[in-house]
Length: 351
Image (cartoon, rainbow, N blue to C red):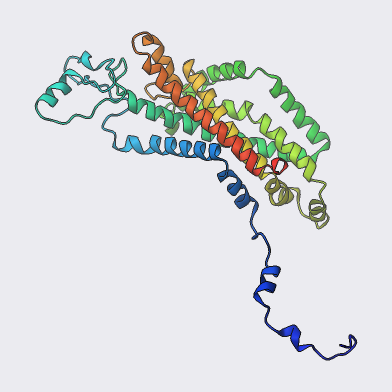
């Protein structure tokens, strides 16, 4: 029997571990991070994964296709300086050709087809749909970034400071939140369009257009309130945690605590809210473009293309159907992807 009080070392304790002992000591589940674990859960959701693939395909197509497509979104076919306008290019059906192109085909030349035909001005409709998709996606992504930055900043300050600061900020949020969204968007877009137009003349922003700048200002003024309320609620529940109190007791500044402790623990809410904000921004841009308050002509967006198609709805219904389908596909895919992100990254929804 071994004496427990003996100072002699037991040589058996230093023998190499057997394979069974190693397997017993190794963790049953390998260590992972919050992001990796969320991605794994997201990939197990086939609907969210398919929606993400569709979004990537549409985005890459809107960027790559205009690089090699032979027609431009603002190129009016049949209009040549010093020559009469060739009206045969106007309102072409899908995969149809104008008179000049038919002569070139008869002469043995290869002419690239108009996949979706042309519009009333003789412009290739396919490239206008592709370019309009690019504009709508760009507006949606950049508007969501603006909403994220403003909402996260305001919500963090209100949630961390509390007291009178929180009271004042949240009363401002409640006032903005109570305003009718679409009415304020239309009013602001109309006023800013008249105000920014002369101010942008001769600047680098003139090519972008006053309407796009107005859209970004509208999103920055109105659409950050939901994000700020979500961030505030999360920070109110996190600021009393032990690690936050320890940081404050150690002399850490409020901005450091927010950046290093509070916001990283709100990342799931931030990701989900941003993903769900993008389709809302795209729909709002399309709605304003449909009303004539969106992008400046001849630059297309999906909403302006649908508005232009109203004039020939009975004769050329596909011009309305195509941008409407693209808008529906983008918004539906982004919403399903946002729901998948919520299921994957929200700890409260984990089984």
